[in-house]
Figure 1: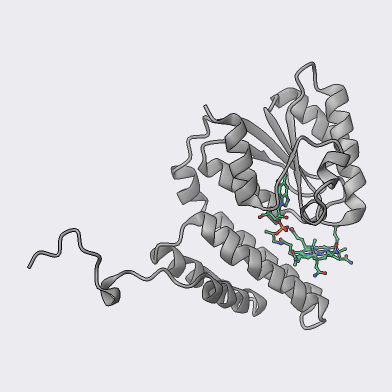
Figure 2: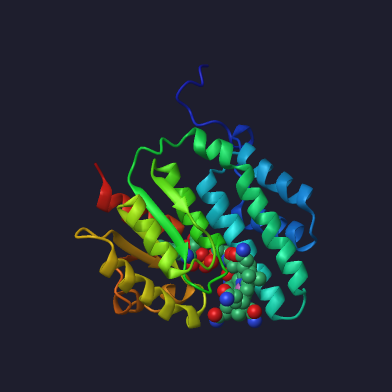
Length: 232
Ligand code: B12
């Protein structure tokens, strides 16, 4: 009997690993500072059919949040946390060949920066990478970008969108100052401004209050909202 068109029997289907399992394996590896093991976990998930978006949001993101909890509970040191973050960033960088191979970079341009004083940069980098997957041309400036320098770069590069990130409350006023400076200095058609990070994800009105146009709780939602606005 032909099996064409039939659903493969359960034991023959390629099983994508459960995301929770993969996230906890990745967390174990990075907390132990075991880079090789962390890369193996990521490679195995990709080989089993998980895509980059899921690897970012369902594995790397919860693992880093797990690192935060362990640090808060004094179960790991700041040095352990630094090592775990560095390994995760290396795991992301390993994906770039794959990511940029599928990305055109012909889409809208976005400049992304963490507010002055803000050192948490991984989340914003995820936002950029997921937009690259959609064909955007992203310029990721990373942590703690001085506002005057940011404004200058925006005036020179004329992006359609500027993404600003703050992960801790004390840096929210820096986001507000940056938005004001961008609007005052960047010509008659200032870019759309999107903000995000923990304080914005936990307070629905904060983005509006600091003068942003758009916000999103995570990288997938950010990519979705910006794609909607700039769909050609
Ligand atoms: C790694 C880390 C650090 C590293 C960051 C290194 C680096 N290169 O990025 C270092 C050591 C620098 C650090 C320092 C500090 N940290 Co820290 N850190 C973390 C940790 C463990 C992981 C952060 C992370 O990468 N998360 C994973 C990413 C993917 O998630 P995310 O950042 O939330 O990003 C997503 C969304 O928020 C959103 N998003 C983010 N940005 C943007 C931007 C836009 C435009 C949009 C649309 C969306 C968006 O999309 C992202 C992807 O989906 C978190 C724990 C946690 N829960 O996150 C603590 C955590 C954020 N840190 C914390 C603290 C307290 C600090 C310090 C104040 C500690 C200290 N006393 O010095 C300093 C502050 C430094 C500073 N001035 O910024 C607290 C914050 C608590 C609070 N209530 O505010 C946390 C939650 C730890 C904890 N459980 O207590 N930290």
